[in-house]
Structure formats: C-alpha cells, structure tokens
Image (cartoon, rainbow, N blue to C red; front, side, top):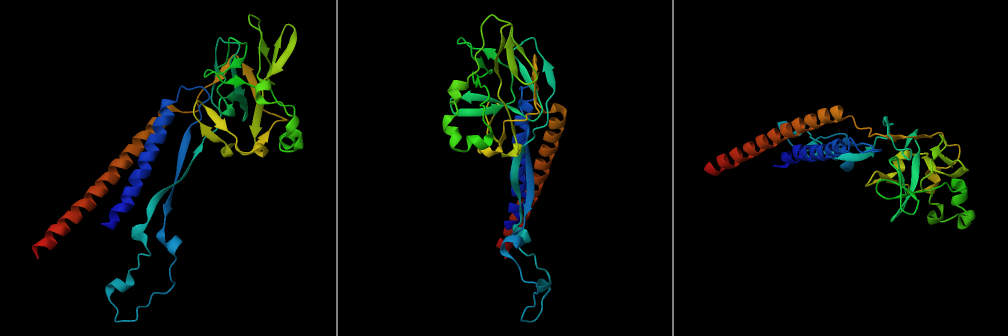
Length: 279
C-alpha cells in the first residue's frame, strides 16, 4: 500500500502545475502580467536518512538480502518552488497619452493602501485630485532623491514620505513623457515617474493586481537606470497563450497517466486482500 504514495505525490505536483498554468492563461491579456513557473525535484529518502556502504547480513543468505531499496519506495515528487518569469512583454500602442510601458528590467513605484509596491502595468489615468493612478487606483510616485544605501542609513529619516511623493498632473493640459520618465507640459517639467531596478528580481514577492513587494531595500537600484518609459504604450503579458495551452494539455495527460498507475496499485492491493482472505 505504501507504493501508492509515490504516484500520488506526482499527481499532487501535476495538479499544482495545472493550477499555475491556468492562472497564466487567465492573465494572458493582463497588462504587465508576468507568468509563473514551477520547479520539481525528486525527494530521495536515502539522502535524508543515509545508508551503510556495505550490507552483509549475519545469517544465512536469502534472495531478499541482495535487493536493497535504500528507501526508494518512499521517494516522492516534491515541488522545489515557483518562480516568476520576468521576460519583457510586447509593447502595445494605445491612444492614451498617460499610458507608459517600460522597456527593460525596471518597475514603476506606486503607493497602495498596504504601502509602496512595484508594478509593470502602466495603464494610467488621472484621479479627481489630479493624481496619476493605475487602473486599480494606486498612486504613481516620483523618485526619492537618495540612493538605496542612503535610504538604509540615518539619512533615511529626512527622506520624504511616500504620500509626499505622489505625482500630480494638471487637468486639461497636454503632457509628454520622455524615455527617462520625466513628465512635461508647456510650462516645463512638472515631475518624474519613479522607476526602480533590482539586483535580484527573483527576490521580489508577487502580490495581486500585478504588484510586487521588495522585502529588502538593498536589492533596489535607484540610480543609473537603464529602463526606458515609452509614452502611449502598455506592456502586454509575457504569457504565450499557445505555449501555455500546450503545457496545460501535457500536464493533464501526465495527471491521467498517474491516475492509471494509482488505479493499478489499488487493483493489485484489492486482489491481494481478497486472495489472502480465502486462505
């Protein structure tokens, strides 16, 4: 009966993969969405419990003494973790001059009710208060004029609060946004969109609504930004719907194959129990 746990663990892993792919497909048209992928590994009992190098039974030998499984019957498939694929999405032109698509590894800094977050979804609009906000109402911030090192030191006490860095634009005025994220009107520059890059993008934690959390300020890079802001565009999802659907079909087939193996184990166990009951 213990043999059933090996295919069962694989079935659970495939179910997680199906759920992940389904979420990717559902967000294939979500601006700035980055797809997730799972990593699997085989958990070997022998690696955790160890084994002796030599197995010499101190008795009369039998055939079973020459077949050591090393706990292999207790091995199982484990999910090593998931990661977000941050490949660049396609830039899609729009008719909205407030839309901004990033080309490069950076993220736009926004203020949410839970605090500062980072996003690639640049479908912006103006609020009633003249604040530049995302499609979910999160406020776009201007850069803090300090390096990440300064923000981790005593100088951070003099840094403006995120509420003081909200980018505000005048109503009924034509604005232009250059590649550096500077917002300009006929009167000149009125602000700049805060674009932040990260040393380790995989350290970011994914949150809902295309938002990411940066758990460590030392991971952020606020100067010498290579990412460009492209006005009148939005970045599409980096999900390839055809590729994801193909992976979804393969995952379903693997799931069904494992189910057949489990049914076979169940049938064997049932026959063994019935045969033993006859004696």
